[in-house]
Image 1 (spheres, rainbow, N blue to C red):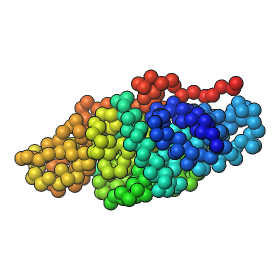
Image 2: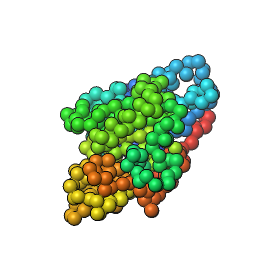
Image 3: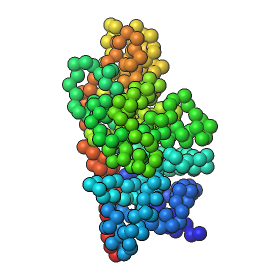
Image 4: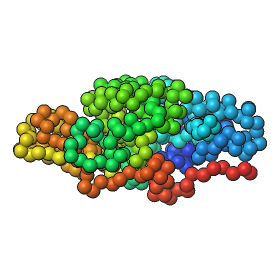
Length: 360
């Protein structure tokens, strides 16, 4: 079996904002061969990097819609391509490596695939993750820890945003699932990766996650908060996902806690802690709670705002309520939507915008 089709697929995936790099070891090809059959890879390379209706794809390939649709649906259900539905029509596109093929393998991953993903992370993904200095994630605290008199924009209210979502899904955290398979399980809960809207519809229809209502999603969020997880979603005002990240397993967060990277590359903090020095008893509970070691205590708690994620975990466990969360005065507002975020990353990397393939 020739690997040429997998090289072609790799090069297409590398056009996405987070890319899919060529490596000396060829680990990325091993991942693709584990995920895609040769036939599936040959169909995937014919798709565009932006969604198309099945009729458009069939016309470009000079194929039959009735033959093509079930093949595309089968691949979508396996997490190999992305499918969305609008007004009764299905649209399909190539799925990027992340967020995409990696996360969509949540039901298929085994120890072998986990090892391949880890090797790619160490060998290539670390080099490109955040290299453009545009944070891919925004961080929001749960609303009970925000200063009561704060005036908030809609996107800054995480629970209200969840209640406004038209569809919600929850799935296992892929990062922690990978760690479990590699014998590195942590104490944190597994099923708390939330998706919304079109992403949620895809997860539910493909069997990658289960549908939940707003109140159940908020309960999951609060349980994640109690466990000490950081609520990070795509760095956009539109709510598409909430990853509840741990510093030990999360691909993005452990770049800060284990790999020596810095916050600006990965996370956009919307809030920051405000410490009441007079009320603080210097108990150091917040020091233990902080996932990125941004807090120190002398006579009272002090926060290194250059490290702080604005996650609010310190606030929720302050026994004397000496810490509250406020919007950062120098807040960098997220992009309007994920497409705008991706476009900015592509521009920063000197890559071309994502496009629809043309009929030859």
